[in-house]
Image (tube, rainbow, N blue to C red):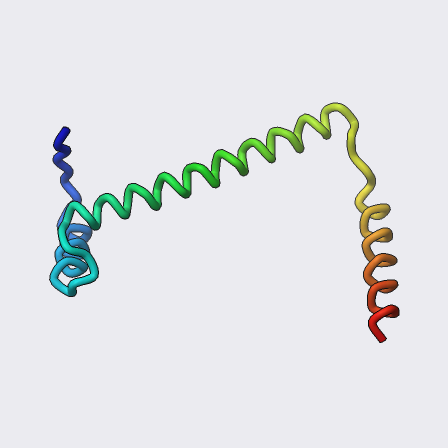
Length: 86
């Protein structure tokens, strides 16, 4: 199925330059690469949304620790690691 897209002057110039510079063999190749990059970004955003939803559910269910407790534990852990590496 063919798709027609109006990119506007600026983006059309970018596509034309990428083809004329030899980075891509055709305008379609440039557009396919752009759509692949958008698809990858959307997957990362969906994963982030899922992680945020899980975190919010944990908060709602009380599965949290005070930040000070976490920071103290991490500080102790990294001090111990530094002491062992000396």
